[in-house]
Image (tube, rainbow, N blue to C red; front, side, top):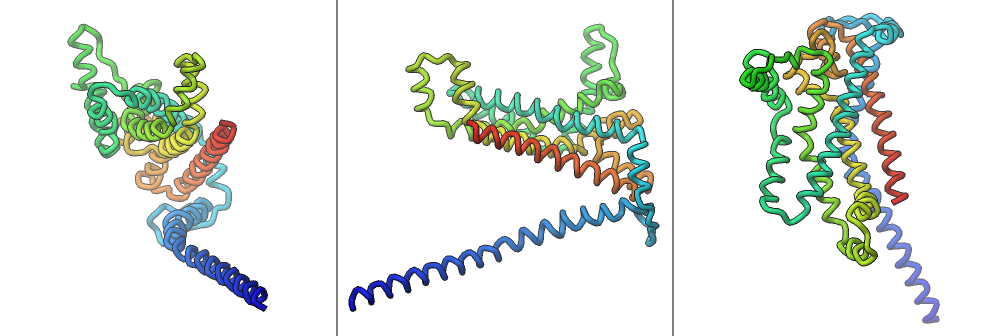
Length: 309
């Protein structure tokens, strides 16, 4: 009889535990609700509304809009400016990603060691991050400006001819990449520093016993253990670079012509300057899919590397 009572109590306790667990899981779903509502209101709804507008000829201000079907998409893919914008957008996204990760990892490896002024150097590298991108763009505009720019003043002082770097369509996209990299390399550095400090010294001590070189330790220990940090940095940098806006507005305004336009600045120009909201929405749908595809590809690729590591 006592054995039966014990089994019943045990069963009752087990059922009670399951009910409490289910109740806890249900309560957690309510905690997700604010985030779901935020994403729906500020991301999902505007995107879907933008898709709807891309099928119209709305000018952005009138109370009426006419449905034109795929006319805006046909216009987009037959517009030579679209391909210039896509090329620049990919350059800003991929170029900034490569440079920020290479420099950020280099800074992190250097500043992870016990060197003089390590804290001060970390602060100096990270400091540009807290400056508005628009302000950073104007600062570098004063450096690269053709008239009275610091770069040309230096060239003239040393007997060279001044250069119109921001007015040269073959140069200014790369200047934008460098400025964006300079400003946000500190974020990559901090993420890599966090990853490096999470690697146990036991691995390096074992490698030293085996006679491994510094390069072998970097290749076999540091890089594989930094795989999660690399994934985070690459995805963040790609998204940030592909939607670059402020620095371009400050440095070149998208010019000369449309030579340095990104998708973001081109959409802004179409909507506010040309009052062509339907076409601007079409360009927005295109860049949204480009960001989505490249981000998912990067996430998939580097997540595989994490598993292999």
